Image (cartoon, rainbow, N blue to C red):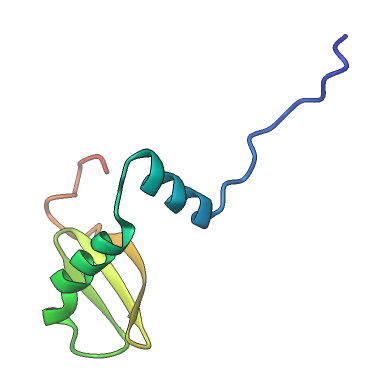
Length: 82
């Protein structure tokens, strides 16, 4: 019997994942954030709303995007893989 303990995958924080994407894939997170904000800015009419755009739901609370979900009611996503 081995004396090694079963090693499980360590939890990866959002911060660590973002830094890895920036460094391993040269992804500019701030540029992506700005581009995403610019793409939805014209459609925001309230500080608390749900915006459906391009098959996604942008959940906006207190003027900020808190999460982005798939819009399951979008015809382009029905019956397809995500």
